Length: 420
Image (cartoon, rainbow, N blue to C red; front, side):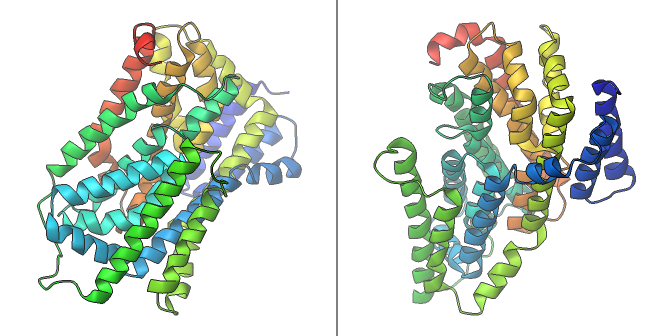
């Protein structure tokens, strides 16, 4: 049998060749990579594991489709544009960035998945940022950043929850350390992007019509109701039943009955079940297959051993593997595969600070191609085609997040008494 290290090398070579040389679609390259790994490890073509792995990210796929459905309803109904006009009529620079940033951040907090926040609230944020005078790549970067930073914040940081489960510890007591990473970076991002805002762009010269005001209020009340509901569910879980993120967003989408024309539902369906949402759903199915095969062949365990074998200070350099591998496996996938062993590599210090910092580093995957989920979805909601201008605009804020995360890991023994 081939050594598992060579299996991993062959899988990496297959992925690189099919993605960068042949330029095959990403879902196909991921599934082919998984099959090559299984064949080399002596498992043939394990259909049961291929099918089983395809359902690994089913909850995330449903949440993404539900977020896209809700976002397209408010966009195509005109509610998002109407709300943006009302806000820009009061103040067209600071207020649009503040409102869109808070909505994205809070939605990321309560869903724990950046892509859902971007899809669900990006429809509100995009016209607000347009009124503030931000260009498309700058606006997309702001949307992706605020959704990702909200994912890092408490109470529902899914990558951190995955790592906590992997090290067999309760997901409790994380709030201070997560706020330390997410909130300063969000404030830095707001201050950075507000300097790029040039004032009102596209605001109508005449006052809004009564129908426009009605649509704006329907949209605003709906998103506030969703956020209030999630606040109650997350902080007082015994008061109400949690019907899951996809169902909450699907129910909220029913506001379209009052503000969307009858023929608009067909356009909503076409927008949701095509383009980037459908492509990312296929990517997540393929990523689930790859993670399943990596576990079956022992590649995942081999990566765990390699990650745990690093000693200080080399382990800090090895952390670059988290976002790089996350560019293929997504933030949640890399948190599951590499986050847990890296947490054990720092086992001599406070594990809560370890997991908080590592979850933030894993979240950088949201901006790492080829998946770059938040970046791709932010480009989709604002209408930007190229990813690199978005990533370039987000780099200063991502640098701040990286520095804060590394400092938290390096000085965890000193910081632990203050962040517990």
